[in-house]
Length: 292
Image 1 (cartoon, rainbow, N blue to C red):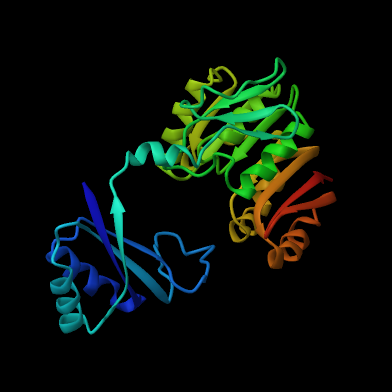
Image 2 (cartoon, rainbow, N blue to C red):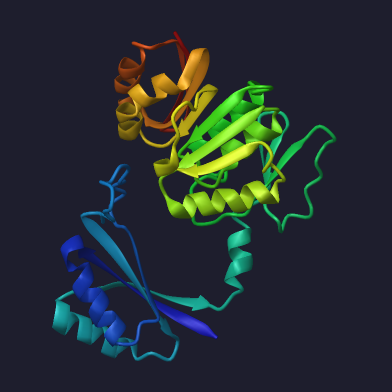
């Protein structure tokens, strides 16, 4: 079976109307994408923002009366079609798998999906078994990659580690496989907590990693290394907490910071941390520092 995708460019205020009309006309699915390469990095909590200019992609069966769809949308919404594509049916699960091969970080740390049976790992490779899911962090994003490479170069052997904003748990699992004595993985998203628990079990790290929701955070949790791969604004807000959590001479690893935010984050942390170092991949930066 083949499909027909009909696309429109609209202002974000028009998305609800055109989506409702398209669903009434028989659209099987509707997706939004950015029309002007205008990235949204740190939306307020609880909001799902849209770009000012949005591409609305509506999927129909190939037998749809395209002329009727175009005429109806023009009449009701005063919006014209910008593009129509014929899409051949595929096994989309297999297509998605092509975007997630096994990846190496540093010298010996790997993240490998369950469907990869071809990659040959060396005897000293440390493999994190993980499939992409709803929570953030599999190594495909630069921010996660920066943290994994740091851990590979600076193994937390016999250290107590906190992974704050753990997402999938990939950084907590990496720390455990690299010799951490204990890891506390914390997130405020229930889906992330669930995802982390599943991945920790899959990687046989339950005896090292404790996963908790942020509301369960207990007094007295401290660490030799704190990792936070989140975003700049929450990193700045959490500085007092992080300073309390890291032992004297302990290490801090922050990621999720854009170039224009680096100086602000450094200024915030320089009161309690020294030996500050930065590294980037593209537009994303990592900061490491030592607790005074």
